Image (cartoon, rainbow, N blue to C red; front, side, top):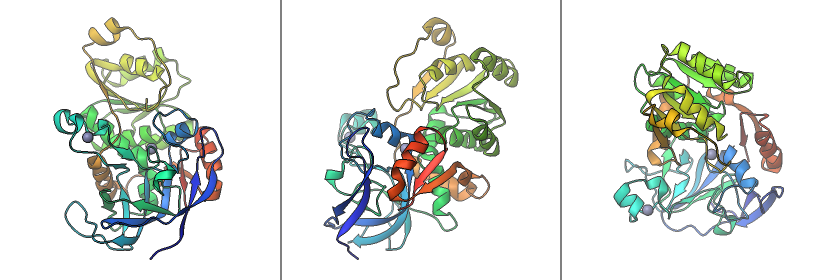
Length: 365
Ligand SMILES: [Zn+2]
Ligand SMILES: [Zn+2]
């Protein structure tokens, strides 16, 4: 099938209201396809992009980096990683990262492919002038080389998008944290990443799993997702340390995952981790400034390991889909979606996420 245009919600420039624009249907080269969007996520990153706080974003921009939908127009043959060809009508998601080059220092020597300087990200570093390459649109152009994933039978599109970017990010964060059976884990932040990280920590065999964040409705959701304890932000940081020690035999947590976004959470994380434990910084995706910390007391003497966690690769998407296939029915993922919005209501969706009125908003074109 072919149409004349793609209808998209566009951020024209930082801090400008989202507008609806039409883009020409792209000329499909062999190995490419179009995805008819079912849902695309409104992520905290989209708020940062709208506020102009992420570098390297070419405006105007069609946001939406994690999306799900049905393949609508396949040119030539597009295959999954097992070599099976995709068919039109298949329900799929795709790795938002494209053009990781495989021939640079990061790809070949240090093998930190999420730091490849050539990578492009749908809805973030591909601008609207590059084509319909963002999810807040009725169709998304799957360029050759985009890694598509088939959604297994039995997983609803809504369950996948409820996990969405936060689930994929937290798969990476748990991997970086090397969460072991019987480990004690603290998650700082009760947004989509924190909620998914709590669920995955528990699925990994951690106990206790302590979530620190607001508001109360999110703490309740965290407990339903597998957290064993929750602490509100009204509890002062020194008292949070006391409680976490109480619940961890007096030691502090083996692993602390920072998914809060506030730089102060990093110094809190160092106070909550046990001696010789590990801190994963996953929430500082944009620059929210500096924070004071005591390197002697909080790092050196504690013999602490601190790890950054940047972006996602195919493996994290793949594992996220597998987790949903096995656990999707048992955990209340869709409880995280507070609202879905049409393209015309994208401004409302952005505002609701920015004001934290909703845990998760999705665009349903
Ligand atoms: Zn590279
Ligand atoms: Zn995101």
